[in-house]
Amino acid sequence: MEISRKEVLRYLGYGVHKGDDAVNDLVEECIRELEGAASPKCISRVYPLELLPDYEIDFTVFRTRSRNLSKNMADCNQVILFAATLGTGVDVLLHKYTKLQMSKAVTMQAAAAAMIEEVCDEENKRLKEEYEAKGLYLRPRFSPGYGDFALECQREITAVLETAKRIGITLTDSLLMAPSKSVTAVMGVSSKKYRCEVKGCESCAKTDCAYRRNEK
Image (cartoon, rainbow, N blue to C red; front, side):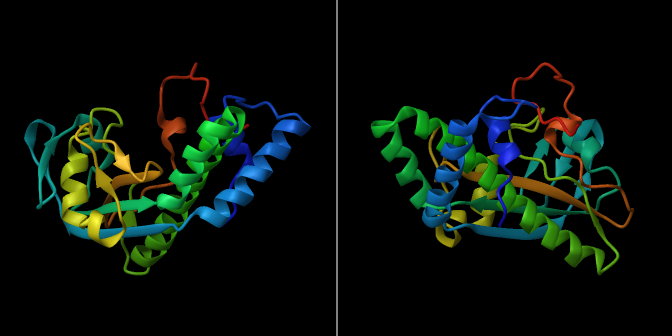
């Protein structure tokens, strides 16, 4: 797994700018430690999907209402529920440097954020290839809390996937995931071929965000 240094710097707020030697050295140090501490795990299951009037979506195992997600899943009749985590070792590392060295803790948080995205991207690439071999195509992953997709749906996704038992993800009462570097998402499956590489920043209208991904 190759963690993008560019993404780490983006999470640190550098935007399109490069870090100086000290920052870049710290990034490399954090990545090395994270690679030793992380134990990435993923799980996914597929269910029938029905798009209903007034932006209601029936995932078979639960229902929600979302205009953004309904648009994302147009022409889909199946949905993949997905979860991934870096494991508890990363949280131990983050907690350690929060107490010992705040500059390293901040850099470690950014590197861990880039790492979990890479884990998700690699698993999504594997699923994309698996489904395309069957003549089916995936939409971009869409996580609870993004747009008008209710964060509360995280409860249903983790329950259906049995994440606590299978990959160690639990939810707090405030819907925070533990381990902290974890992701839940849904991906539509369709027989119609659309591009599915568009990521959050590229599809977001908030162009003045300090953390925006810039492909130039």
